Image 1 (cartoon, rainbow, N blue to C red):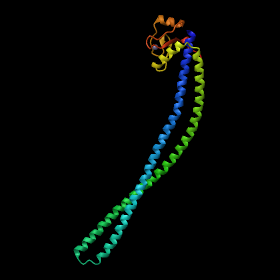
Image 2 (spheres, rainbow, N blue to C red):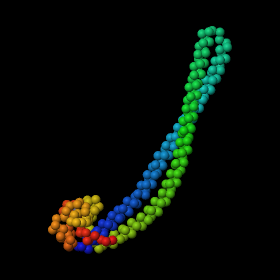
Image 3 (cartoon, rainbow, N blue to C red):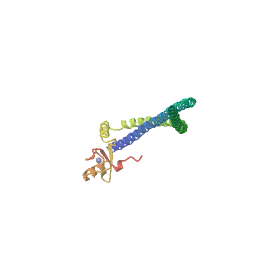
Image 4 (cartoon, protein in one colour):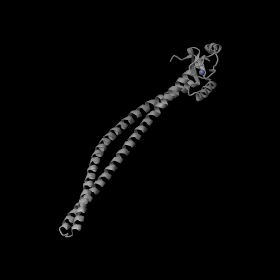
Length: 239
Ligand SMILES: [Zn+2]
């Protein structure tokens, strides 16, 4: 039994190493996905900025066309002033010209505001495009790095799976069934070390008689509290 428990601990160590390799295998693609998501978000922002530029340019053109029309209208009205004899009509037309001029001043302010926003947006777009291109380069180099890492980890994993299968052949099949069952409900740790008469997983003090028996290592013992297979310190493999 002593030898069997020792092999079981070895199996557990291997299983943990395999789990951590599998986690590593998932990390690369997850990281790439995260980067691609970020890139997509930035591309969306840039697209919005570009659309906003088109809208502002359109608004600017519209204000400018309206100003031009108003200027032509004012010119025509000034021409009409010469022929008006009626005082009331004359004043009304003057008032209309003044109103149109005020309207034009407002529109000129709007054109200026458009130009200011356009300048800011164009700077933002330029910076955004630089950032995007840097990020695309970064993703490309990450893909290469992760690809190499993945090859390496896959090789390690396949070696580890092979040596695990080999190890399983030396362990009693009923013991393996028990190990797998406990592993399933115990969060991956089926075999617990007992150190100073205490279960290292649930921290229960092992009763003295059980502790004595455990040190003889001639029978399978379960922790009375967490039900894991327990082993004494000396049974811990030195590797
Ligand atoms: Zn325990």
